[in-house]
Length: 117
Image (tube, rainbow, N blue to C red):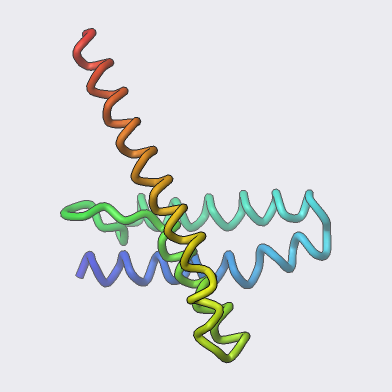
């Protein structure tokens, strides 16, 4: 049941980000974008991490994955073709490699800090 909650929480976050954030930024400029980012991400983060729908056992998946999938799917549905997803694959690969690099460096730095203590 936790996994279903994780999927739903990430999907809801993705829907809010993709539907509300752009509207706020378009209507109120950069201030609206900052407000939407604060309101949406903080609310969804609280819901996903403290209300108990986030997956805490097994593989850890952040709600950013759901937001990314929602954005990619939205682009494909708006365009009416899967070509949008194919065109975005090089960017997705670079982002995934960046995440792996960041996690690896973070882990190495954490291990290094623990050895010093």
